[in-house]
Length: 252
Length: 270
Image (tube, rainbow over all chains, first blue to last red; front, side):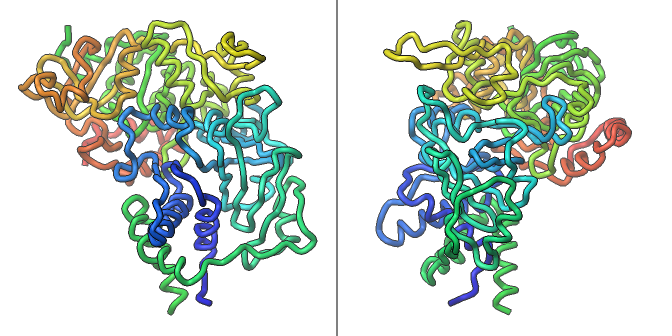
């Protein structure tokens, strides 16, 4: 088995989480989610199937909207976007996301940019993947200081979308909206349950011995390191170059 | 009737207490207007970021001209947080009207149609809604059962300011596929536009260009300002100057650093 970089594990996991989507939207500075979507498209096309449509916000080549920045949201409201990614300065165990700031609003002690489209997209995009590489107790808190977008909604509130998974630098969680809460699905190579517990400020369900996150096979890695990194370089040249440098260091 | 103007003269349209709409960093920000606005000095401005803000918002806040910021986010993108905005938030020096992107678009859409509000899905259960006294939850009157939905009031800016590649000498403005610029213009009383160049031919005469034109009907004044979005980029024209944006981000970490940056000899686009 070839050596697989931690970020390659993340990209391949995202491709798996996206399987079956017709249209995925990716935020402006999200190279790993974009790479995951591009990998899924490459895998589908290699198998003779039609890959998903990918909209990368802020990109010229990967953006086919002609109605200004409102069109993405209109498109999502019409049910035409199946998957989207959200990060967050804080994410809690109920799937609530805080993109506004830490401390008491409005005079936050730390102010983050703001909620962007989350307060809408989280409600109407069926497969929202929470993605944050940094896995620490300051990100994964018991309760967020500000709800930009809630993980679940009460009965009677229109909700066709929401979180399905949380992917971090240490592991993959599934979201169960009936509890609501997260369940640890797998642990990335090099990490373990005790470490994840220590790094997570909320309680989550897990097996006594959680399995390891599945690693990509040779064919998938070849697609990723070839076609996908080429495509990625058009929009995220710095990230693609860094991945190739990291791979060079592994091979050497 | 459109007036061919220049940035300093256009800034005089801005009066204290006005509501000013500004576009997202990649749509065509008229950075060429930022210093003239600051020199003009009309304060207590209520900014509307469509739907997010960056460098221009940070500089207007840093110059002390801003009373409220209605926005879905403010940041300098890859260069990190918006330093003067973040400091003003911490000090309580600006009032925040935190929003979400489609709510800003919905408010402009309502104004465009002359309607008092636009309903919008989502939002229920967020702290955004909790802090927005102007947004209302009503029961959808067309539903059979209970169906709460949020009403976003019309956003009617006094002034909209943006930068695009070209205008013709009749005041028609080429906005291409940046349709949010049209939405802002429809909703605003006064529309100030800077352009890279002014062309002789009527942009409405050719069907290909006409589809991407904001007609002069909505345009108050146009001024020529080559590289007028710098250090932001302009679609189809030039990329952002990320080194300069990073230089600003670093300088503006302190109020003194911000003042020193802004006091430099007129910034010349690279």
